Amino acid sequence: MLRYFQQVADGATVTEVAELYQVSQPGVSRGLQRLEEEVGTPLLMRSGRLLRPTHAGSVFKRHVDAVLHALDDGLAAAEELIDPESGTVRVAFQLSLGTWLVPDLIAGFRTEHPRVRFEFEHSHDALGSSLVAAGRTDLEFTARRPRNPEVEWERLFQQPLCLAVPPKHPLAGRDEVALLEAAAEDFVMLGPDWELRTQSDELCARAGFAPRVAFEEDDIPVVRGFVAAGLGVAIVPALPAEVRQAGTGAERLVRLTDPGAFRDVGLAWSKNRRLLPSAELFQQHVLARPTTPVTSA
Image 1: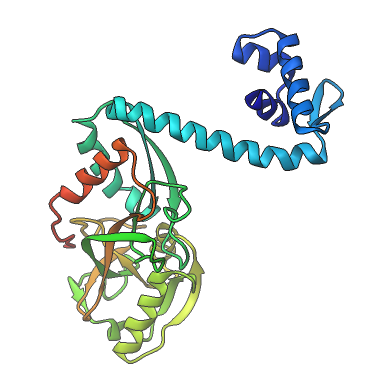
Image 2: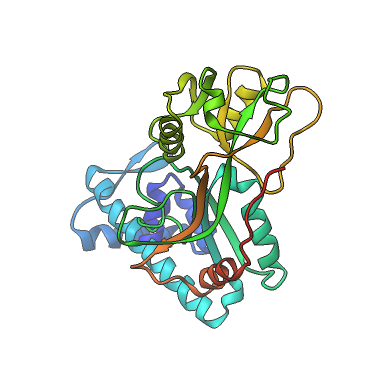
């Protein structure tokens, strides 16, 4: 009855619910009526061909959703105990890590566990709560050390920071540079709530200057695109074995020699929620992977 009510309250017709659960339409209607009798108040009202939740129905549905989600999680947990290879792993990651790290790890994992499925959510290193704290995801790849004591975080590797410069910039031909050499440049920065922005400001301060921020964006690839267009320079993390690209229209990355010019990339998970078997398998795969320094040419 609860699932009938959930589907109808979400906009499905009685006919669609009957077809979904392979029961008769009168059976669905009787189930909804019994539910209203048990609750003691009307939960649905007719609006054209559809049934809409009443005020009491809307309040009741929030609890129904929570109960059914918990039930589905329990059923999934029981199923995975029987066959961990058939589970689903919910993974969050920053877009800058989704172009290389996450696909590489999943590809290696799927060679041994081909039936495990994945669901993804994008995050970023802006200051705030980790997605694993609220139970939205099982594991999160992040360059932010969670401040929540209920979240466990383990460093995977250090990712060097580079100065991204336009292709025809005087520094474009260099292999490395001290940040002070760019003190007079316009900078393209992430927004002030990003941890990488805080780190960039601190690096500039230690180098002896305050950066002149010409543009602020909320995504590292966009920042790099602005640099490629000649709109400034930027402090960005280097991809593994990334080299300066030839041709026009692409920014060049020059390794920063300043102390502390790197960011830590790690894996986060909840201390309070036990991972389901499939997620635990992937966690073990990630943590057991050899971590070699990310280098930039």
